[in-house]
Image (tube, rainbow, N blue to C red; front, top):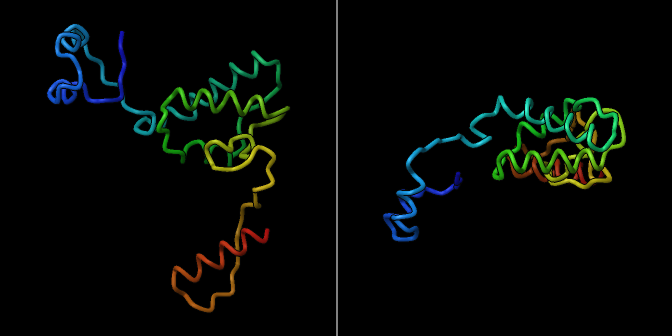
Length: 147
């Protein structure tokens, strides 16, 4: 069994992959869409991995907060299922009890494990002097940094 995320037909044609090896490997082909293409699988796999790692590590973790699941589902998954598996394992290592929260998932949101970078979700009101996107974006960034 062999797996690749590259296009072997194209690699053989470009002489970057041996054609004899390609012929031996391509007797039976199975195309598996990327995890990003199978978005409905993400929550199921996340819960499966959470259950497995919680049991292995002896932790009483019960699911994901709504924000954490949003973060997981909105991520692009360049590393596919293996990246999800590793991310959930790190989240279980970081959590102590209760549900997995966004603070436990910095690898998917660009945050930190200690939560110092998090701001509360909800409405943000700004005094808009100039309605241009650049101005509003600048004010929002200033607000987030202040919080």
